[in-house]
Image 1 (cartoon, rainbow, N blue to C red):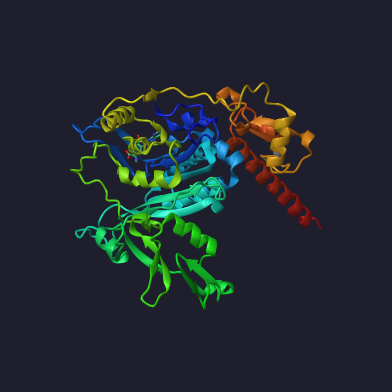
Image 2 (cartoon, rainbow, N blue to C red):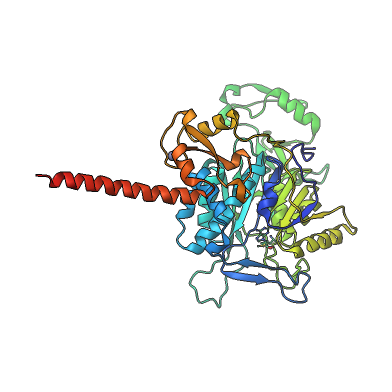
Length: 483
Ligand SMILES: C[S@@+](CC[C@H](N)C(=O)[O-])C[C@H]1O[C@@H](n2cnc3c(N)ncnc32)[C@H](O)[C@@H]1O
Ligand SMILES: [Zn+2]
């Protein structure tokens, strides 16, 4: 079973109450198979569940200002993720920028905790989907983008004033590594009428429905003229055969009724309706209805998603026993679906109401109380061991390679011995000795930065470079003024 993950330091069936950033930072790297996240959409609204509903008391914020963003987040992105930094600065308003920073630091952690065979689905709507696509490209790399899935969540309103209604949500689907990703083809079953139309024949011996397909095929010309022995008949083809004699023997051995004979005595083979997996779905999902207000699945939790949506995602991108993480789990839809499909799960939500709802929904579902672990502490990573000293050659070599031998402040190139290890987020304000929080600076930049943030260093360097340019300009013009 793949789910018994040696990497994991969090027990399956755990629901955390708290901000997902520090909690994910406490999770081991490469320890989950699938991440689904349905974060706030930056919709400029504050959500609250109706009083009296199962979810009453749950509320969350979806408006953003720069005050919501801890400067340390930006420091880390500026120092370590220049492409992501550019994406954030492409945002058009401060509100969008704050939202993107808030998401970016969390996406970096999701990338880290995902296994190399894993996938992530970021659920969003057109408010921010295009910005989030860029942020995902920066974190997961563009080559690992697998699909932008459009989920039709409403029918268009005839009373709407707009010419075109927005009725879609979007799922940005990425692999951690597209060459290793685990994926099961998503199909949708046909209804009976359509199935009967496509499989029009009934096998008299068994009653199974089937269609029949040619066994002679042009593309195999090399076998033209060869005989094939099928049961007690021997036939030759002028065109060529789809199967070798041994394939015929093997398959007919398994199913003696496999061959269909036409009136002119040509063999064809049967494809059975009961073996048809369904129609491939593609990236436009119109067959999963949104939860109507009276739906029995509804808990009253704002923004609740249908279990069927999560069933499809979980079946497509995990196997039984795999670990599913939902870091914005709301009323536990993902966890309920994962539990039913025999996957392990970990949920996180900042609202304490979420933990209550997980227990309620899963025990309703199972008809008994399951071994759910509810926590509000921060897990301790067990995959980095004890870090005795940060100022070691190993770290310096790693960082030197990562930064291409350049100072992370002024950008100038230096020999290794002239660069110093700096804490991006100073230890005095909670920065750690982990490599993720270390960078190399030249002596000069390190002195300027001191215990302050990266932003301070960057702005100081900018002032110095302006002064330098001004100085240069003065020298130049004075020189020109000379007779
Ligand atoms: C759109 S809802 C998720 C709904 C969920 N998919 C469901 O079907 O119920 C977003 C959730 O994110 C939670 N949230 C917002 N910021 C968070 C944070 N920093 N850490 C953890 N959860 C957060 C909110 O409390 C809210 O429940
Ligand atoms: Zn420097």
